[in-house]
Image (cartoon, rainbow, N blue to C red; front, side, top):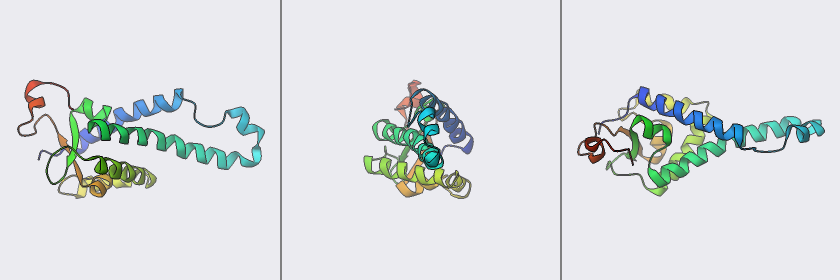
Length: 154
């Protein structure tokens, strides 16, 4: 399988980070600033909780996209996709759920789970290893009708 490069994966993550930021900026999550300041005794706990929730919501939305489409907007733009590591077929719903939980763990480790890509022969990050998935370059995948037709990645 033609595994996606670190550069492709980084570009996809950057693109996904843009829409994550838009979601977090324009969809109010948690209490208002006035509510937080009205209770200074719980300010630290409230801020920490909502920062955590603010990180989890986009990751869970991304996981839902993986489950439905096998890709995210960033991966789609870069023309890479997630597949089962053994068969090369689209990942299952179970793999999408495991990958999402692994993604949460990767981010909880301050992104350290991404470092595994450098040292794994199949270019798997921690969340890929947990779900037994790989990220492949859809433009050069053998027998990929989308690559030949120029259509978007499924």
